Length: 472
Image (cartoon, rainbow, N blue to C red; front, side):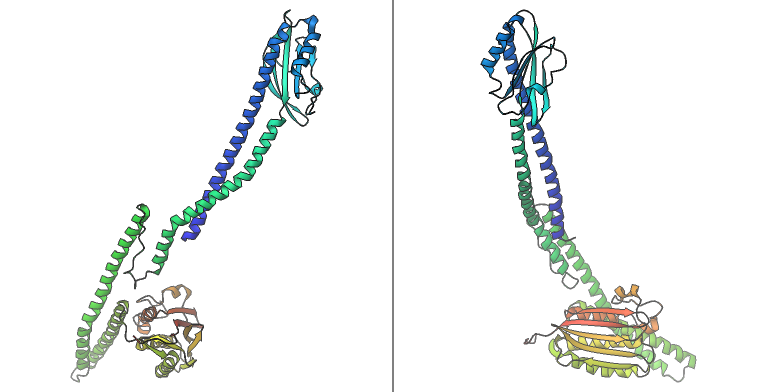
């Protein structure tokens, strides 16, 4: 997962959590505000009901209830003020009931009486067409001891209108708030992950040939800075270990060349000594073959160590097609014994820049590999052409092919395909490793395509030489 995809995932997670928090906060705000508004309205109605009970009903008598009705109308004018007022006795008789309010939000005649203990105050919400009605009821006692109940209410429409406005504000403001927060979070995440992305990009560029390079150190004073420093220390240790390994291979290869040369000379002299028995000379010949093979391995390892160390000959501009044609003509002599045709199909003028000797070694190794594993009477084709800004070199054979499971490993050192490439036929398994190293030194890529029983194709892609390049 790269830094960009990680930032998108973090922002998506952050947006989801933030949206959930904002929605829950909005719902809690809405519920709390609704409860507060309704409670405030009910408290106002209860205070007004207690005021009526304490000032008007407390002085009323059963025979003067008409006066009570007039006083309520005169002092409170419920129809004009859009209020509901009802005074009833304990026996259920309604002493006073207000009429239809001016805003016509409710019908007083359809408001059911308050249930429950007559001597207890209550607060309730009565559903009516067009909204709810908030009613507070308090008990009262007249001057003659008559028990009354005073009910005062008002429509909940104003509170509901306020809640509707708040809901619209939340519906509009919530997405805006989330969008702003997510945009800010995305910017912060991108800025936080930019150092990680730079480190990842630099890490992708570092190979065994460029271990001297280091990751950019993030001077942030946090764990990210510690991580970049630790990774650079790890790269330093890997560089030291790889340098030691390469130096050991180079030194061992160099030291083995002289004794192997001496052994080969001595064995050749002994094998030509006519005084030795035939069996002895044959044994010496077999040992000499093994020494020759060992010498080839040492020479290949020495070449690989030099390539790993970055040693290269003089680079020059040359025609890769011409080099391929000349090399194919030379290698065709090796294919004569197996009656294998070596054909060269090249487009003239495919100019590249590099070490001519090393690139010739690439062609030789690929052709030699194709000839070895192509049955008698087969065909090996060498092609060179242009593809855009690249020179493409292909070696195709009609040989035994390579199993799919072995394809990812063919360029590894000392790798041979079991069963089809024996020790005698497959050499030491270093030829393709040398090809890979030479291509890497020239900025080229090599790939292989193969079908078992039908043949293989090795393809090298190398940048074409610029129009004018000074020789280095």
